[in-house]
Image 1 (cartoon, helix red, strand yellow):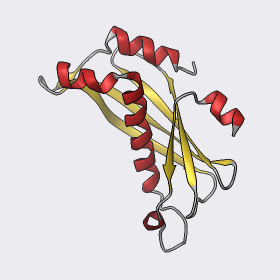
Image 2 (cartoon, rainbow, N blue to C red; image 1 turned 30 degrees about the horizontal axis):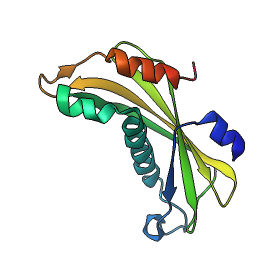
Image 3 (cartoon, rainbow, N blue to C red; image 1 turned 90 degrees about the vertical axis):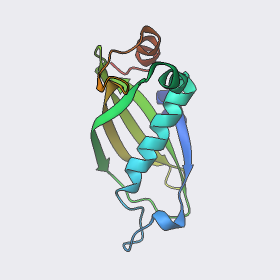
Length: 142
């Protein structure tokens, strides 16, 4: 766990719910995308980025999601989802997620999202603010 913490200074703890398991007795594959979303929103909140969305009307949209399942997770457990950033461009970047199981003491799932900045007022792509760009670079694994 210590290595995971060192590699992921921003991470989100999520308790696995009984209802997230499927008929095969493990967390259903779609639930991981909810875990990614929870970690993504927590990441943006910790950076103070979501406040800007209300003021500027500019925020992130997901153009692509990916997940690779390495080990099944079951109830009861708690997972930690670490977030890192790569491929930063003027209007987009990649978010990478690493899911670590407390009970297994191992990484169970990795994933990514291609994030594009969007102006919800104009309905068009937007550029990253200088503040967000600096924050993303601070958490980049490039």
